[in-house]
Image (cartoon, rainbow, N blue to C red; front, side, top):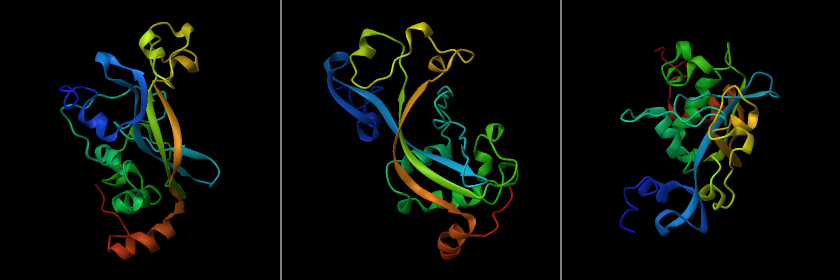
Length: 209
């Protein structure tokens, strides 16, 4: 108990993590899936094909390796983590960000420049944007400890002891994620402008970086 406040499985894990289990864990503590909630933004140019909006440091897809940020505190990614703990009506700034996704590009908007511009999937602003809540858990190297955690995903035997970016799909997934629920339904710029941006008194045309 004395280590729970500051170990890697400590305060933040107990406050915001998901995936509790009754299986024995390290040091006699309960094991868990160590999953974290995350809001995933997706946008579409035609309303049918949806592409994920990449953040610089927050979990993105299942194949991108976790990115170390300490001691840097990425402000947008940090706020996305807090948004995942609540609802969009408690995070109006997220709706403002979504409005910028459907009206601007990272190259000409200060807020969108905080995204992973190198992996941004659009050359022109998409027409619709939506948000979903996922639970992200690490994919684990095969081990007796990993096998003892109910629901945890392990690498296939053929993957060996690590991840390989040029290997088959089962060996590429650093993350295992589970869809939880819709966070914000699909909306376009007009809906966001009329129902959020103008009532809040925010600029309809975001300032350039």
